[in-house]
Length: 73
Image (cartoon, rainbow, N blue to C red; front, side, top):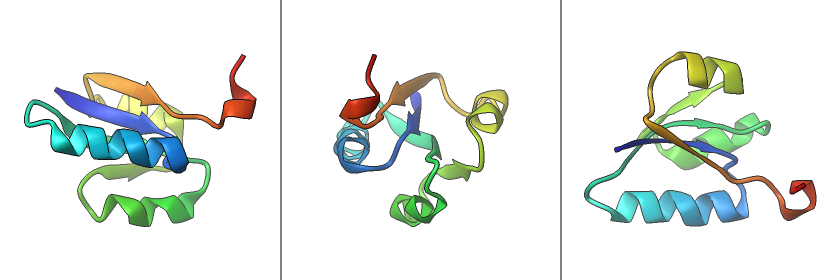
């Protein structure tokens, strides 16, 4: 399954590692408001400048949302 990841901060890194450990999963897309976090992908997934662009690209089958705890509703 192709995954997109929204948020590459602390918990995003935990989820990124989990995706990479599963042979049935591939991280194919990511978005973060901090563009410096794109370096964490090490070229293994496409980093998008906007969430809309990532979703419009049809580059993932599922999306994991990894936002800071203080932004949870």
